[in-house]
Image (cartoon, rainbow, N blue to C red; front, side, top):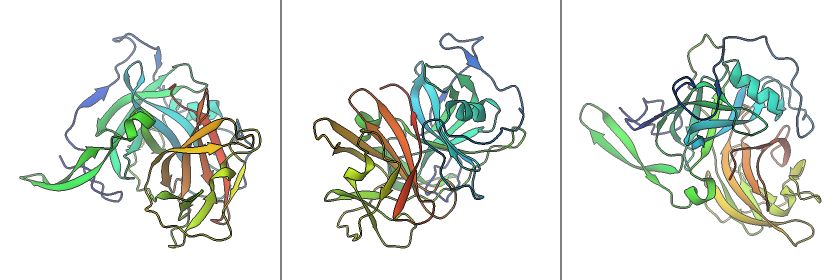
Length: 319
């Protein structure tokens, strides 16, 4: 079978090992809950950890998560993090409900190059001690810590792209990767949407990224991602002048930050640059690693690419 060769090339999945979570009746470990069918439509979206933003227009409805090959008792699982319907929410009950009601039958899992590494098919939910329940299921594909290395022609299979391991990814992410599911009705087949990805790089003391894909770089001062309380800032504005002499990448690791007190160091990983909601502007998905906790945050441009707003913050699998 052919591998994914580009973000817009929807070929079949590569012939690789399957990791399968079986039902609780036949396996030990965490108690799982299988979706029982369509539930009532959810009410208004509310924020759990941060205030609602003003991006309430129409657009793609998605659930962003993190897929870890050993997330649930040594088996593949997706921690649902931030939901986008008529707005953004990180409320644990809302993100859990989207999985429970069967609205996320398939998550697309991204590699370090912003291309698809594989797909995760949801079979139910399981409690692993997080505020939200996580999706259990089966994963088919390459490690999220891989990138497309070279194209190889195989008889009867056409051209496939082999994937190689990025040695920096595993220590930084524990071999986990971004997982995105477009919401669908439980009776519909899983969707395989195309997501537009981008890249970021470090230029001096700024994070350089083309938010709206117009070829012009927006440069966000690294110090601006933290507020005075050493939490993610509610807003993050670009510097007036933007220049970058660096090569953008989908993921970046171990960027050192300091809060206003300049005593405790915080590390930042760029987990992905991707247009989640389909509005033509890419979101930034970041991991902030404090002394005792790691949180994943999403920044979105609701009106202009020079001004990012915090769409949500959530906790993923323990590190």
